[in-house]
Image 1 (cartoon, one colour):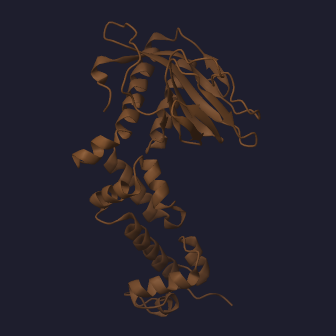
Image 2 (cartoon, rainbow, N blue to C red; image 1 turned 45 degrees about the vertical axis):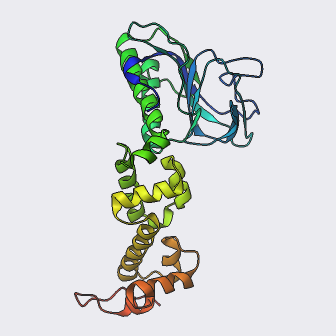
Image 3 (cartoon, rainbow, N blue to C red; image 1 turned 60 degrees about the vertical axis):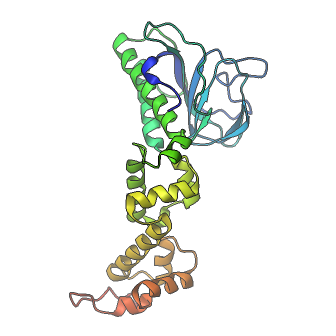
Length: 300
């Protein structure tokens, strides 16, 4: 990781949630031109669409994106009026063991982060806000002092979130070490289970790699190391396994089965099915299974 977290802890300032409003500006939390952020600011985008001008140019905002804003920079954001941004935010400072505020750290992870485990980050950010807030809903802004016990738990959770974001964005370390980072295996296994459970609803490998926080080639290598198969092969095999079940257990037409498991072209599905099974989908359906039973017939 880029930061030696053993030397730092967090101190939480104001925090809350902002409901998207149909205006072009993103609200008071988003600093306007000529003004600068005075502390660190972690934002998690829950809904909506927009963009933010960071130090190195504009970055897209969409659900699941995290922003780690830095003190001393005039950020500026815009949003889609028809799809306004809803986000959670936590202002914080980093302090040393004696509780003294630290100067801005360098190097740090990038400002715009797409964590591979979105649900984890969202749950932790939500928990931090709820602990300090008393579970207030929607548009809210709260500043310290907080309940001492809740504040202590929240600061530990926030440090864990920042460490996770630091870890998943340190791509060079992952690539050079050739070893799986701690979060890799759980993420790949979860994706593999989702593919096996519903192969027709899986996004492209490009999207999966972006969620993972790396290039397509690195994601594919990591996926193969965990599952023994490339993501493309795993998806095709999962689709074919689901096709077998639907052909055996339902009377759905072949075209509907192809669509349900993610094929846009029923002819391509039929050709690929024959390559795997040596039979067309209809032949497979009509052939008796190992126990001598046949698939349900379509009612006339």
